[in-house]
Image (cartoon, rainbow, N blue to C red; front, side):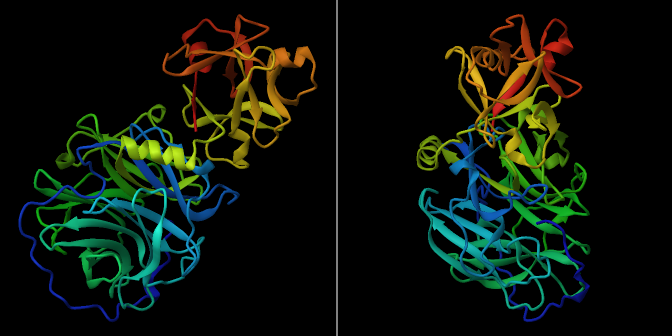
Length: 462
């Protein structure tokens, strides 16, 4: 959840006094971890951008085969949008329920009206994330003058119920993480404080039953911090991990690799134009995380406050078939992986993401204008214009139909000169020259040194 309002005006009324039930039996692996058949991932999110050009408060989907490189679906448009409450969402969450179907939860808030309070959250059911049914508002508590932010859920086997975690303000005037229990995501019971360390915390993310321990990651003072407990009882969690952040960071999401013993911790920057960062650990119990190289991961364009859940390969294939892969690509710089190829003032350059207008970085890689075995870069927001070189500098020009323009705008895609899993682009009519950046400007040059090879290497993604 993005900026917390000052909580001093809020009061804690109508809190149920129900005593927590005691969890019994073995704890099952919960939200964010895998079933045996899972081999891919789905992400849910909403979108914002630096000038709010891409502010969209519907439910967005992306998929990944490795949990690091993400492909937005439905052309990065929402697949469903709330119609009740605020008629918009933030902080969506997806979980596979015990019956194998999915439930989607989200904050009832459109935009950034942080003073809007709601006792409800948005809920959808879905058999396969290709259709969404049973849309409803779900009431979580009877408190007044407080919110229900960043809902997430987990299965509590001992109670035989799902716990819904969310952030609200307690009688001391600071945010705590609450829990309300449900069997069907249609009614809730026993709302109570789940985690209150005595200071402001929001954005709870639960991982259940890892070597007998449950982990609750959350936001504290714009950092991501873990708490843990050997039970799922409210009040039993204690903070233990070393905080991580990249600037101000929120919205932690912990995900287990499906192919290794690695765990990933995702976080979202504390701004409307959020950027995701990722950390890695091979031991949740250690509570320490190492920042991942940004070359290794790419978030969906303009995505904010995500949740990630494993899916099967069939579900992955069916989601792509239903919603479609993007009709465009983005190109990430190898040696400046926070920067993407864009046009600005019709000049080609690499620039740090995020920026607006964001379509400046979207390209259609079409068959080469001079040779269909090559590629040409057609602008998404200026579709009559293509990247071409002129005096060796790359710029975005309108296709004048000449053979010279076609040759200048055609490149051969090769294995990346610095990393063969990435790509480089050799000029059609100057075959000893490659697209590279120099002082962030794009041009075609001969490439000889290690630095030049890195300058000429790009990742074609989304």
